[in-house]
Length: 256
Image 1: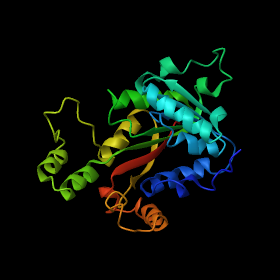
Image 2: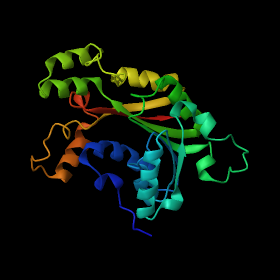
Image 3: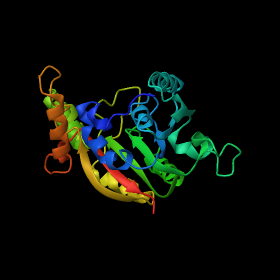
Image 4: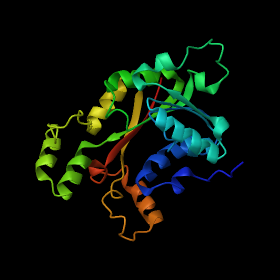
């Protein structure tokens, strides 16, 4: 069996360093957890968590993404701890059978998870509030959910720096920056909007943090030491005004 990394955020891109640092106190030590990853089809989080010994159930609408998940998990030697289920986050009750189901001993069908991940999903689902309520119901009392979304302020800054001031202004005013597109625009959230959604799902949110404050602004060819960028990201994540312009927002919340 592969040797698990001491800390998963040390092995993954600098832009997710602050997110992994927040999760580390939950997943880095202690007994194995039952983890639900909503919309995490390709295994970016599921496989590292499984390498740490946790059992991860991934619910994703894409069959192709779930196939990639299976290949990654098998290649990493953790296929027995990663379970993929095709379905939508706002219909988890139809994907995860209720307790007492004859498959209840299978982690993939256990509706009482210790930790749930909802990373960059609320931007694209039909109803973010419904999705968060479904996730909350899948948690055991005291269980926690990690929610990451696109930060509106960070999106405004990114468009402006890229030389698109008209689009930046549209995002600032919560308008579609490309209204003629065939597909609906992704949502962007303010910290207040994210915390309101979480509280509306009867979850108790902790402090919010910024994800990728500087990593997405640095060019790939800048030559910056990735470890130094990770350290800087962790330091800036909970500090205003830096966190306010991050690419993403993150909050850990608990089910009472």
